[in-house]
Length: 401
Image (cartoon, rainbow, N blue to C red; front, top):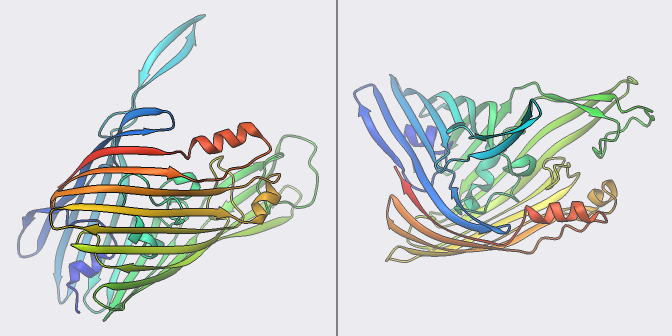
């Protein structure tokens, strides 16, 4: 089925659970829309009950008809700190204590890109945008409170995936096109990044075989361009298959002159049945294999791991949508060899009940039961690993624009 230009250029780039956008201006050439959602919830986990922001965001989309099948477009999206995040800080000045209040920024950048598109020639975009890898695994990233932590999307211990381009990648150029039921995306993340290694740093796979008798810098590690690709095939009206990969490279240059490199690699596939917001059954699963792609709960790189996410739901005519999912990210033997026999296995079951009051308003109750294994001979490290993964329950409301 032939898609419209706006759908192929924009909807393939941005995955949202509803058509949550309001057209605020349109003439023969230009169109402007505002989208996003406001979400707040009460959550009990890790021994505390708090009011928490539910990834609230606001975005502005711009489309301009350039004639002869060409259009240009842009999107800007900010995360909104809906509930505030003030904290008490204590500093010593002139021999006394001074207590002050500090607050985080109200807005933070989530997306920002500009592009051009054509019905036949596809779309080309530049900026901070969802990576091609997200095409493979977005189908399970639909739970409001707990999701995306085993699919290789939100890397470096649940950040936004900007560093390696699998989530909301920074400095990315991306090309997309569709031919009938088949569509694809290819991207390059054009950036220059580096960090220093010091004696005692445990970065498995990085050693030039020489001893350094001081605590000084021993090497500089460069992590520059990354590359990704994905393919999507609509087998039937209900069944969608996805596959893709993303790759980058760490290259360490030691003061000895030696160089050592390791590859950041993830690849995998997914399958989806049905539509999450449509009535009836929805099922999705994705699996991945990765190397030096993500970090554990102590921010240590995982040399090798495999992951899976799954989500199943059923939406009734009255708007009730029960759901269940199972997620796992398990490090391989090389992780234990690198970190004194430690075990990293993030694993949890999630259940929930959504009440879709109307197309733009949802109430939800979601729970998580943790089955993770973070065994370590260092009990302090084990406790720190376990603390960031816990049982929990949340109740909230989401208002789509």
